[in-house]
Length: 375
Image (cartoon, rainbow, N blue to C red; front, side):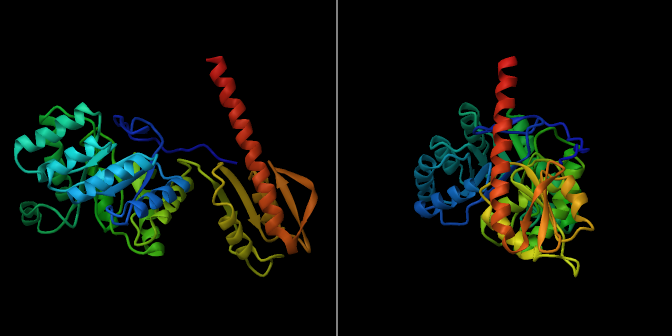
């Protein structure tokens, strides 16, 4: 069963992105970014709905032109998730998407230009209760900072970020979050650690341009895991050269592995060996594919032998311990009388897992109702 999380979160202020709280002890939000052309409204809406289906809390949409801003208006009307509008340089686009219902503006104040332009965006954000995300990237630092440090360093990223923070401070606007991303793990981690000691606002984590699905997931898990284990981070994106849906899945897997946030099934499975009494790898792969729609947090152990199987099964909500021809099934640590035929495990386990998920959902619903009535 789920053990207590030993991580102590960094104290941060709270902002609100649509209906999603960020910082101040709120659950760490997982987000992705659409990779369709924003002007292709149907494709962008479809992708946002796919991201919502796998549990995305927030979605960022690039808005590089006024045509894209008009498309953003149509997209906003067709989706439910909070949308972060990604804007660079043109303050007029920021004003337009704020009017059209953006829930957050990803815009660096120092890149907008004249003081009155910055003030107009900040005043608009304040008026509409829209937070801002300052986003610094190791690959696009200001020329003078590059010349000062010679190469991207944690100090360089943080100095760039603080330039933008100082602008918002001067305009008395504190509803913002900050990211200091780089493609190098140690550069990113160092920058976030340094920034975390200098501001109280929420931090959006990411290892930018991390790579393809496998290598990028590994790099992100290491970098984000280091920070999250230290209590740093209030929202995150796993940046993969892959389907954005995979970014959400990996993001939740990282949080799940650190016992920070549980969503969906946590499969405990052996890598298999000559002791296995059934095809563990194929069984788990099929179950993961079939049960992607189950959002209930639960541990399911699938072990192919009687050496480690019973111990893992006793610690899970549901567990299978492989044995000759038929395998033992455990529920909430108790071995059940029935045994499952090894030749038909996937169908049997899927049905049992779905039933258990429904039971847990109902129990949670009753518990929430009782707490509400007591308060």
